[in-house]
Length: 127
Image (cartoon, rainbow, N blue to C red; front, side, top):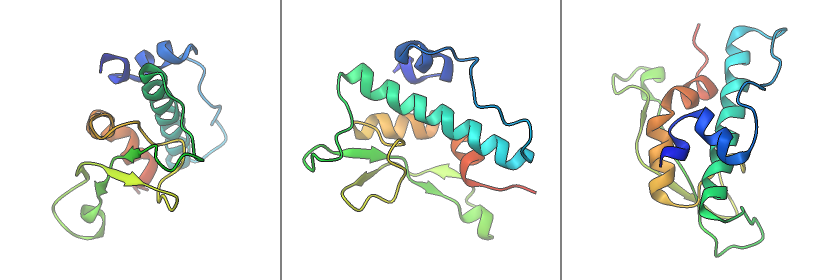
């Protein structure tokens, strides 16, 4: 899965310049990190579908869509930390952003573990 190993590799697959990221200069650092991370994950997701030769089809309920699932208990008092637990399969009632899904379980788990820092910046507000 070299095409998903880095944001830059995913940009190559999609055909965009990895240096063109959203302008976040007027935002607080916590929100800025979340926006940049979300953008990067959108591109990584798009690359995963493009490499597989498929498009996300939200009208096709037979097309499975996967996303990583995280344990955020550390941020509510547990010592388990921020970790990728595996994957989830979203249907018509998906609990994940529609651009953050992957075509198969292995890809979702790989991206969740490889890009844990991006998901952390997206989901956790650290003070």
